[in-house]
Length: 315
Length: 281
Image (tube, rainbow over all chains, first blue to last red; front, side, top):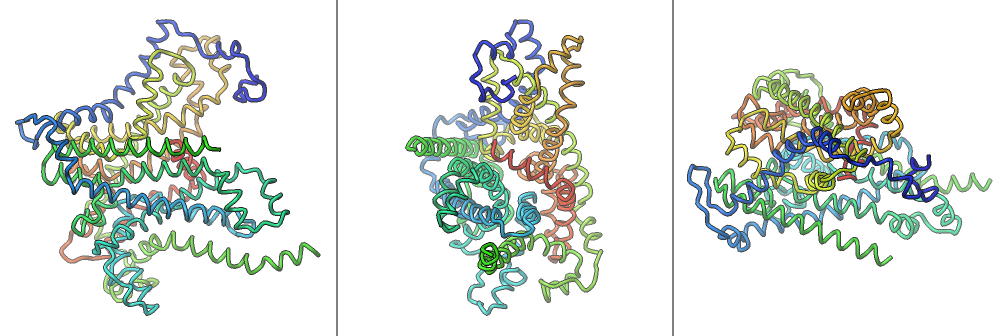
């Protein structure tokens, strides 16, 4: 009976737990595979095998024609020296910095506010801030392209009415401002999701701890920083992973809003390999850079995991 | 008495906090509102004053938008992709998770970690690989290729959600069914699957939204006009000679409307599903 509570009420002896997982006979294993394998093969066909095909092609100079020439590790040597690729990856990192501060920071502040007893219509607010992340990135990109327009855009009109004419710059055409501008779009779109995740994490915090602190005379801001934030550490780690993995795969919003421009100042890694493969027709080298993106994002995730592990160990 | 003074002291803070929350919520929906309000305005009046409530109600934008970019065809395509990937994902993930949850077998960990890796990998880094594969196989511009890709895209998350749900379904039910003489297929389809109704709903909604919104794979795998999805079709509103903003807004509104209706109907389920999905990923 107690097994349904995950065995945490009474340490369940192993002997009782074993029989619930059926011991396998070879006949039964065959049946299991008959059910599972078709789906697994389909999955591998769609997403796993392409990686290996791509790995093979990344050693060639294939341009889509009938002739395929192997050129060893030339592509990889070239990739390591490719300034444009590293510029694109650098843009991903820059974006990551904006999004970590922007998405997680704002989400934390909003979550604290929505948790306050003083706020009315919480449910409505929650629904509204969550709405943008349901929209297609393609739609969001097109709408925000117009929002950033200097003649009909919302920002331009707002600044003009506030007499801040010199704030109106073609944001998306400025090499310096294009990345912050697009990260504002991304923060706008996903902050609701992050906020709700943090709120879910806050519900696990023991209310009596906060009440005790309140009686001891702490302010709301002190409670936020010294009690809520440390207790939310694991949630914050989850969010960091989300930002990092989400950041590496960004494609559509850049493709639609700037296509990497002006120049290469908003080029991101995935868009770069897309352009190589589809615009320059360099399928070989494009595959190399796609593999590069996969490797780099795994590297980032591993570094992040180590980092969080070290922090968790310290406590 | 103590209570009352406390409340009075809190009043300014309360007003400030509420105003702030309202402003945040407004910021979140203003671009969407702008889109819908402008979509029923004439382009001339929009150009004069882009932010204004509509005085006239122009339905022409919608008519013209549907004519220009064959949006209805795209919506039909997207609906088709949604339905097929939804059915595939639900059946596939249900069966896989059932065996993952109930049995210990050789190779289980391997299969599971492959699915897991599918979740960690930056999906769009696979654009070039996937394209190359279907180019070699000659399956470009084939609906099947896109459906399989969407199925695989949704599978890891669906398995996670199904598995944690089925873990909570009592094993005694399986045993009872077996003793009563149910075959494995009957056990799955008649006993366990109906119990999974809540999670089926969640996964269907999540799959529907992400397939409807998907852009990148549709761009590379089905570039043909009559196969493209809504997210791709919206780009072609602006390819007219004279840029007509309100027409473009009308198109965007049409594409977004199904999602918004779904959200209005199932906002709780959608929020819950997307959050558990995001955290598990």
